[in-house]
Amino acid sequence: MRRVSLRSAALAAALLCASLGAQAALFEDDEARRAILDLRQRVEAMRQQAEQRQNDENAQLRRSLLDLQTQIEQMRGDLQRMTGQNEQLTRTITELQQRQAEIDDRLKRNEPAKVAVDGREFTADPKEKADFDAALGIFRAGQFAQAQTAFAEFVKRYPQSGYNPSALFWLGNAQYATRNYNEAIANFRSMLSLAPDHAKAPEAVLSIANCQIELKDTRAARRTLEDLTKAYPQSEAAQAGRERLLRLR
Image 1: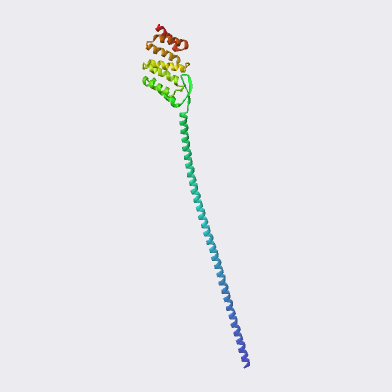
Image 2 (image 1 turned 60 degrees about the horizontal axis):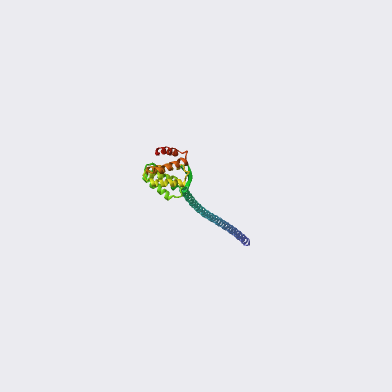
C-alpha cells in the first residue's frame, strides 16, 4: 500500500510539474504576444508620427510655394506697372520735347534776325520783314494804289525800322505812279533826310525832279537835277539827270 501511495504521489508530482511547465509556456507566449503587440503599436505610432510630420512638412512647403507664387505675381504686377509708368514717362518726355521744339521754333520765327536790303544790313523782326516784302510784292505786281497804302501803313507801324528808307522810296514811287506828285516829293525827301547815303538816294533825287517836271515846275526840277549831279556824280541817276537837264534848257 505504501508503495502504491508513493507511486501515486510521484505521479501526482509529475502531473503537477507538467501542469506548471505548460502554464509557464503559456505565460511565455502571452508575454511574447504582448511584446509583439506593443512593438507593433510603437511602430504604428512612429509611422503615424512620421506621416504626420511628412504631412505637416508638405503643408508647410505648399504654403511656402503659395507665398512665393504670390510674391512672384506681386513682383510681376509691380514690373508691369513700372513698365507702364516708364512708357508713360517716355511718352510724356517725347511730348514735352515736341512742345519745346515747337516753342523754340515759334520763338525763333519771332526773334529779330539780320537782313540786308539795298546794301544796308540791320536787324528786323520776322513780322516786320514779312510786311515789307508783302508791300514790295504788291508794288511789283503793278498795284500802285494798294502799294501806296501798304507802304504808308508800314512806315506808321514801324517808325524805327531799318526798312524805312527803302519803304519811303517805294512809297514815293507808288505815289508817283498814282500821280500824287506832292506826296511823292515829300516822301522822297524824307527818305533822303533819313539816309542820304542810301543806295537808292540818287534815284530818289531824280524822282523828285521827275515829279517837279510833272508839276510843270521846271525851275525847281532844274535845280534838283543840278544838285543830283553834284551830290552823286558817278551814279546812273546823275547821268540820266544830265541828259534831262539838256532837254530842260
